[in-house]
Image 1 (spheres, rainbow, N blue to C red):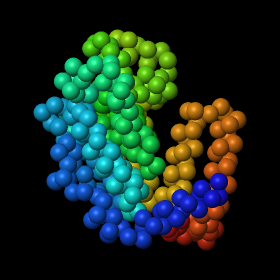
Image 2: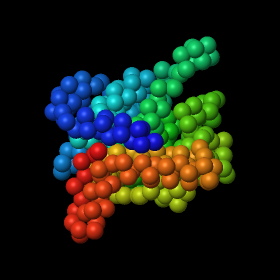
Image 3: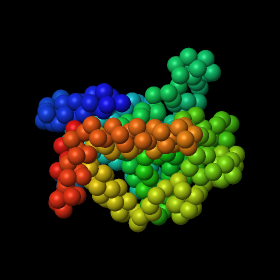
Image 4: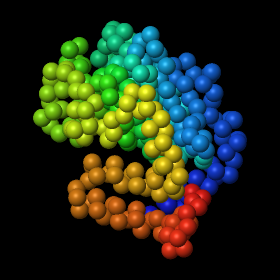
Length: 290
């Protein structure tokens, strides 16, 4: 574990040593993306920002958009200045679903042979914390995309749903799995089997989202949350995220052991020492991400 920690620390140190190189060589400008807008936000420009940009299609998730999403996430993952990432859409739609026209004529052989939708899960494998800022429709693939993120903030008029049953199919990118873990079996069954939607307040009550905001504030609130996260040690934040995600896969005893090992691993970092020393000395910690 300490070897793993040291390797991770070296990675973070390397990415921080040449932030200008990374930003110019790896973080492509939004002009190079067709379906998304990519930039950095926050007072210190330490929050990666991805906005879905298919307004005429209500941000329907086509394969090209998801490939661009993966490229943008890879860039932010490699950028030592970025400590958190926000994904959003428009006020009308976070994403109204997958692109049905793109899928309409696919065959089983094509889907199975190409492992269709497999690369869409890139959002869920990013080590840095990802926040979804959801306004309007988050349906089908849009709801699944939001659930791949670590935190969901919703605008007051947001709507969540998995309406695939109305199209003669089922969710294919984690909808039946993540939704059930978030809201429980009964509500997940009802949403998936009827195609009915829930509003932002119901999503908050069920545990699907953590915060409901006015429509015009949800993005700024998500960026503020990203700034808070980015102010902490990036390597320790990645450990915390890994520990929480493991809770969905492990038994309580195994999860507690895994958590304890990661806790022990923080003692191999300079940031853990700096954080505790700063607390004792009653000053603000100055984390260096190693």
